[in-house]
Image (cartoon, rainbow, N blue to C red; front, top):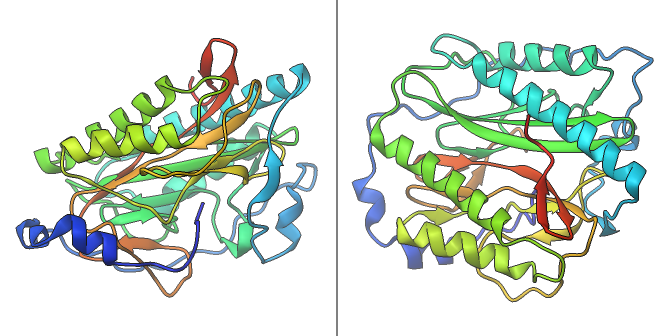
Length: 308
């Protein structure tokens, strides 16, 4: 979820200094491929309200807090999202097109009576986001074939029985070098550490501090313009979850659901958006990785809803 379109390079300059000169320049920069037509969804599958509009609805006011029935619905949508993501990961190999991953994800979602939440959200043309190498987020599946050594984040959201489940993982394609593997490992650790501190009454800003502290130890940048969010009956709701140190107010409450989805970079964390108004890449072409879970705040801490 994008916080704003006002991308600033000031913090990037303060953090990175001359480090960009050290980046591996052997990888080819991403280029847009050919995007196939939108895939159909059977008429009997319920659509989220935003599908009829090409304008993104933005962040809905108020948190997503659920009764027992709502919690069970969230568990079901989260479980399906996790299963779809797990299947998508098995498809990652050199030579497969990201559009083929979209096709497989789309089919599995509708076969389970759900709607692929990204499809039609603000005009997004596909059923999943596939973000390769320097793509920070919101990559549109297209005709590009994955190459040996790529990393790819696959971001799956499903709308099942009126509730969204949202999750993503960064996968290795073939033989990935240590630079890429380390980035992916630390990004996953950031998410795990952030989830571990969640519980009723905990300040949301503790999430950002936890992620930033761990990323700083490894000298990775943390993307600021894209955030976690409340999720449930609506795709994006309060609260906005910042993944960096901040002084925002607000505390977690029992039975609340939201995502945590840190995006880390090896070099510049200053994002550049392509002309498609979706694909966001690092300014210097350096690698970026992301992991995401939907969690439920329980009396004992946090339950990860998006795991098999």
